[in-house]
Length: 308
Image 1 (cartoon, rainbow, N blue to C red):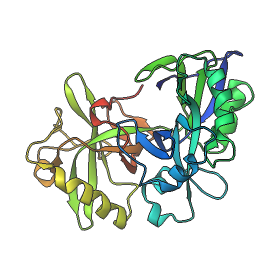
Image 2 (cartoon, rainbow, N blue to C red):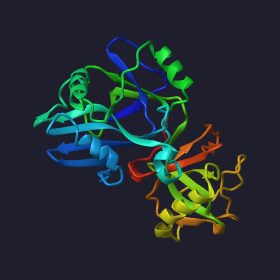
Image 3 (cartoon, rainbow, N blue to C red):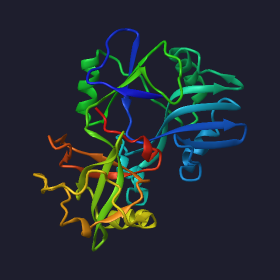
Image 4 (cartoon, one colour):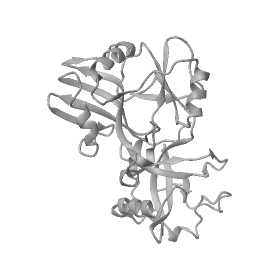
């Protein structure tokens, strides 16, 4: 179940609020001694995040399915998506799982129960397993926004307490307010450089095809440029996958690709997804001051659209 994007949080006692965590959405599945972590695309993450699997083995039920987020946190509990991506370079971060929903418990499907009931049962299932609970934030919507933005966190999720769990849908019973402008984009190419990647070309799908959004040079270290290059080199293609390139003139912010620059680019099959932070969308429909945060293995490229 996914949340719809909103520009303001709903108010009222029927709504609860949680921090929008900056990590990988995943299911924890316990069936006796067998533990699995599954991404929203069905990828098995169990071996990659073994500490989470170990904690899941200590849940207080023989069978359970938890929905939540895999997050890298520092000593103060602050999450970092980049640390989650590049764990060897961020050894001072700890990988944890924040659970926010319980979908199955000892043979019983809970998806048709109200969220408030599922959350109450979730607390009992977690115990002292090491799986963390995504807590409900007290206060009015504005108080919640002030607290979350004051900590520099990404946003707030609001959920209707009576809501049932509807898999695979963006439902109006769950909404999200982003305080930090970022979203996923599809990688369609790159400009080669001395460390492998000099600039990353990203876009999003609409009904016409893959549209160009930005040429990204910020957010990289030499190590990260090489790491992304290794991921992309197996996806090389000859044709540009963007339906709106080349541009007739250079972008005001340097993010476009002119016909003269096209031969300098290496195109790739648009299968990989990047998380990108940016200041705003320009009138040209491009990103201003975009920075690369990391690759996402939990989002299907075909589902990436421009968020509004």
